[in-house]
Image (spheres, one colour):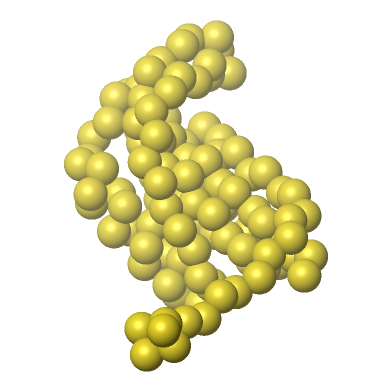
Length: 112
């Protein structure tokens, strides 16, 4: 079945100080609460990378990648806006693509 996949990338450095002010675990808990409050299923991965600010300054930073399968663009944009504000980010990146997806169900009692 064709479905929409949205991926949000959010850096963990504070937009003003350009340094990570809070532990990744704490920011991850905030993110979990945001997604939970929107009643959307999601997965989160930790990443590291770099970002060029609008003023040209480059910073290395930890990031979180949030993947939403089957959600709407409206809900994704709301989550991205909330996370951008809560994490005091200059921007967050949203990627959208259409993917094939399916669910598999199985239990140990079904295995011969």
